[in-house]
Image (cartoon, rainbow, N blue to C red; front, top):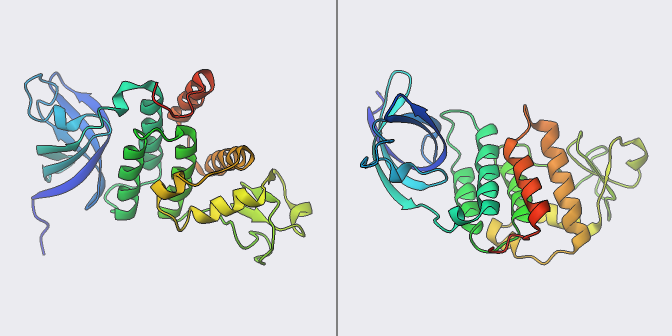
Length: 259
């Protein structure tokens, strides 16, 4: 059975690159086809019908024509442009982190509907006043679960036994460790019981609901640290957006609130 030459998909714009004087290459994460790149001809012209629908982070419905190397974007209908997101640098940096992280952990043409839905939900949440550093940590945990790299919060990652408490997390091994295994761990990060519960909940709870769960400063700090360390162990290259987001949040201390 031959693949249709023209197809439609729901898409989120991950990135854009100029091509020639008037065209643009857009990186799309689609629900139906996975990640792909397509040429948007004339998209850089002010009067182009493709310009508005291919804004970075935008959620859109697209029509594409299959090409030999790159597909061609022929129609685009904007579903959500997230105007509130674009009004503050902290939200832009957070959205950049979400999309860059998704880009790094997805392969071309491998659909992942759960991850698409998760990314779309996270983009909506960036405009809700949620603590953005906390949102990116929770998204990291859930995204890693979607792509098969979920950290283990029960049982112990070393002995595979259940424990009433897990006082340490090993970024290298990818999970928590029980008291008996703590002496054998290297580079361990301390974890309180609440942090472990939040980590476990991230694998069964919707992102919006998870972000509303009250959390103590200690557990929040531990989750932020362990997710970043766990991610660093598995990244092929550092996230550029992570550095910008960290610097911005540290210097402005907005806690994700509208500026």
